[in-house]
Length: 484
Image (cartoon, rainbow, N blue to C red):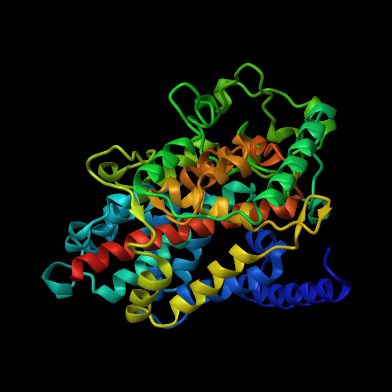
């Protein structure tokens, strides 16, 4: 538990930053309120963000905002796109560009394929991916310079990952007038479910205690590939999220559809309201399915909905090219087109950091602080159990996310992933980083282990930061290989 002085410092940090954010935005965005549940990390995060989007750099401000729009659109994250469209215009952007990619310069169009691959299958990026962008050695109005491209890569990775946070904890639109007094909602669970999660928490703590002194000896390539296969959470017979929960919706207005995400900050309905919720008909844009009650936005006076989800999804398609409409596919260690990447071959600390420093001075130090802080952040608790060393648990999340994108840590014992991360938690993490638009409230509420809300937010932040780092590694590795 934090001391009184720590709590006072956190409150002071939050107050000071909220003043600045309010002056800049005229509102304190829900995203900011969510991030500041971990005040010290949020402070570091915003330093990186402000440097990336507002400080001096290779790209003009309006281009930064538009590249961010393209990145957030990959996961249909309307929350971010709405804010970025306003930011784009405030930065002097051409209003015509907001009509869709048909109206943008050829130089930006050339980035669409790279953006899609970086988001969904970054291991497919190679020297040719860079050659297509920097033709004529960066000379000409349609060619990217290396500095511009590096800047663009960091922007894209940031907003790909941030989309996962938006969906992963269920952040509502900023113009939703849910009372802020309703910040943390309660979720009614069966006694059996509560006990099961408490038992899993106790098992997790016992496992952490036993593995605290384990020797993580290196494993050879064969063992590593086997570990890749054994940590998979998805197969053909059991989808991570049933199709009917997401196939017809854009998950931006999380709480107006059956696949609303968490109730971390702005609850959709209290349990007593859910009992009386009415089902929507097909004509209203919802398709009923067995076992699911659809919450009507009309049953609560505190949620504004201006159009149905299908319309919103269509509006975001203007920022996508049908030719490059990729989606995440499980990394296949047996695929002959690519192979597993060892973290020792190209990593953040030794390779990506120096390349980023070369072309975008100042960004590497900020990102390094961001990665290191979230990875090491802990209050040594697991739910209500104190004095717990969660190092192995955090490492398992980080390495699992890297594994999902084909990067292996030779000095990490992958057996720990299955020992420390139960199947429900792995499903949640994979959804957040691979296809966050499919994230459900149920996944956040029931992680299979009893955790505090801020612990779940920490897990979500760990996952998206690990994804951000692995995308940066792939993006900068392709640039590095092109230059050699």
